[in-house]
Length: 190
Image (cartoon, rainbow, N blue to C red; front, side, top):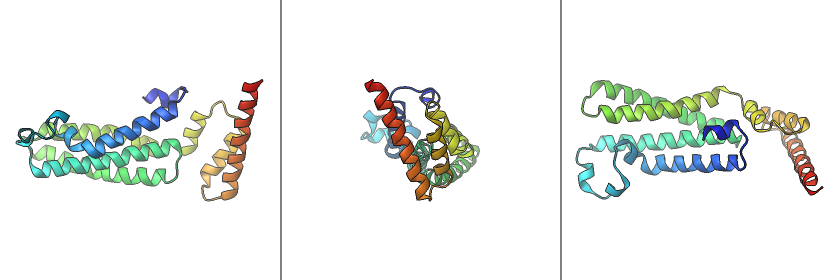
């Protein structure tokens, strides 16, 4: 999946968006199943929940929600959608809180050690991706995706990214994008 971000693949951005949305939905609706090692076939089975405390279920539901927010933030930042960095920042703060609580709980309990290790591993991996995206400037993502685009479009879009509230820069970037699209269509028709 990460190769889609680096190498241009037909429908790569669509595939990336779809996979990130599915991952987010899995964490949002199935976080407690993932962290407590409960399979989908056992979701209605009372015996699957016998060794699971109510606070552990609440913690895994909240962790699933936090990771869902973080995955959506990662998607928004990479796709350069509005409020991506705000969403990513919110997800990173909540993920940091979950990580601290999980590390403290892992050190203080012996019964739930595997539960907290799974949680720490998932939180660290997704949190690391979020931190990397938080550090790298948005222009870098755009340049990586548009390596074959005209220079006028790249410069207009970079200016629009730097000042997202400037309507004139956004209009100029849209005009350059439309010129680029029309130029590609004309070259395909020839």
